[in-house]
Length: 198
Length: 228
Image (tube, rainbow over all chains, first blue to last red):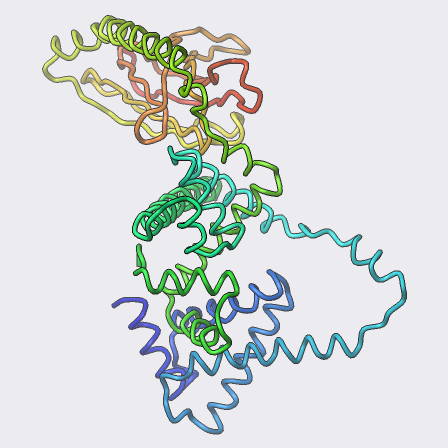
């Protein structure tokens, strides 16, 4: 059974009888909602709280009124998460107290207070550095950086570097696959090390 | 999903670059929640972007975008380098043939040579006990030792195999140079006749030794069983 079909059947169970839905299905949905929230506010306790709150709201709603179209559960969860995020931002804006020293206080906060986030970033930097070093053509390295770092438009990059769309897609595809491989290898080694310690 | 079709990839790229309309963004976010494979592709792309941002913060992006081949545009330099590379390649080949002869002889002489592959994962401390234990058998064995040297290996390593005696005594058994193999690791071969039961330390010293950001890697190895 693929993870997709697991999620699909889990979604149905979640709607029909939430108490019998599989952990895997709920976890997959939760990972998705958490990703959306963390992308907006970073990895934080707040993101976890809002994610849990979104599920609480959806569960309660399902208990009262089951969805007419069960396939819309993912959309419903995503929308609930967005609404909670907006509400949280509005609330914070209303409660904000301007003291004049706020900028100073904000600057004191350590942006990398979570060591796991810093470690993850380092691991990603190592992997992409290796991808870039493996690319023999400067033009391909420029393409990757301009597209993913500078967010430049694909058409503009192709025009500037005198590339066709096919070549562009090929470079991006290969870079992504190598990145996936290097990142995966790193994770696998880390897991083995943890197992060895255990 | 190990790959993603062009249309979906374009959607992911535009989502992460905040180039989607509100309706498109909501559709993508719905898929992120409902399709784990799609979400993993988004996460991978986001990780790639994050890695690039981290590299830029360290000031490493600009050097990586410079041409590494500027010298080659000068034809005299290119010709001289080509000749040198050819000479170096030929010398290396001859040297390799010569150094590899004992091993080839060994294989030829023993029709029943057993090959054993040992993998040494990178560890943080040599005090944590042996990384690998191997029990001798009666059959002569050729040990193929593979060492994990991480994601950013040096160009080559000097591999020193020492037998650890009592106290701080150590006897050097082997000192050889090894490059990075196709799997990204360093590999050497040792015949079991050289390895008496006991503890061994294997040190990989990065070459060239002037490399500032590379440190020696130490592995520990224990041989158990009967003496030869």
